[in-house]
Image (cartoon, rainbow, N blue to C red; front, side, top):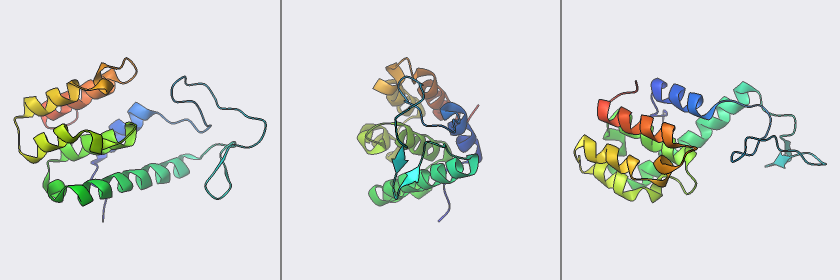
Amino acid sequence: MPLKLTPDGLARLKLDEGFRAAPYDDETGQAITCSGNITIGYGTNLSDGLSTAEADWLLQSRLMDSQEKLERNFAAFQGWQDIYTDVLLMIDYNCKGGVLEWRKLIMLIATDAPVIRIANEVRDSDAWRSSKTHARYERMACAIEAGHWP
């Protein structure tokens, strides 16, 4: 099954996240260092960083996991407007706890609530209020209102 994230949504996500080949602390932006190698999974050494191809593969894999989670929990997910699926996939990728904690937003989308109510639900979030992620979540709310990415 193909990933439902639109090309514009993927470009926006990559721009918001930025690419760094070396491991870093997401909170501080500082490089992660240790006396040994930073490893994950089956002994994969992250100390040498990731290529853009590896990062793209990992991004696609994580987004597919998010999409499968939404499809399992919401039968109508495949029929939702592209901008809604983009925003939900981006939230799941970005937010600790994932998109399933955004039940009210999902229910507003699922019940075809007015666009302004859906956008305002994004604005009524800790992520929108955070100085670190405010601009990203405001862009999401504006995209919901417009029906597409600016």
